[in-house]
Length: 143
Image 1 (tube, rainbow, N blue to C red):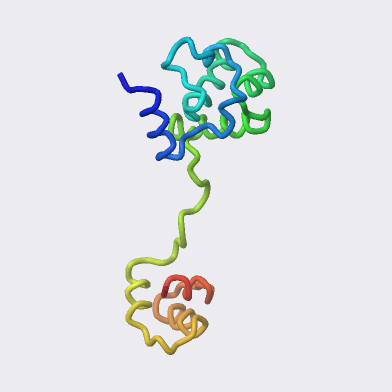
Image 2: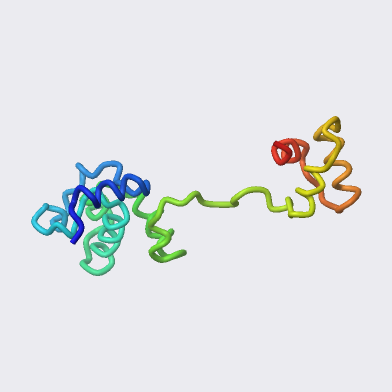
């Protein structure tokens, strides 16, 4: 069995420490059972949802007992509904970088004349590849 100190270290390294573990007052996290650790953000989120959905605890009470606001509860529930347990991780939502920058366009940018401006390269990419890119996207991709 993993020690609490080891578990806390792993949670910290993973960015999974509950930001307000001291405000978790749910009975499961009273310290009697070492499995339930208020500092484990994912576990606390899961137990908050479970308390509401299975135990019938109100949203307001479940959120408060687990150190979250009512608004955060709904965001967490939506993320869980959308992605299951992965939704309980604090992953950045939305797009992960430019969609139009294919390997072919990146190769072109890295071999293009360094004297060309972002605007000039964007125009050339439009001509060659039929892609409309903002000059700032081109400039960032060149770095």
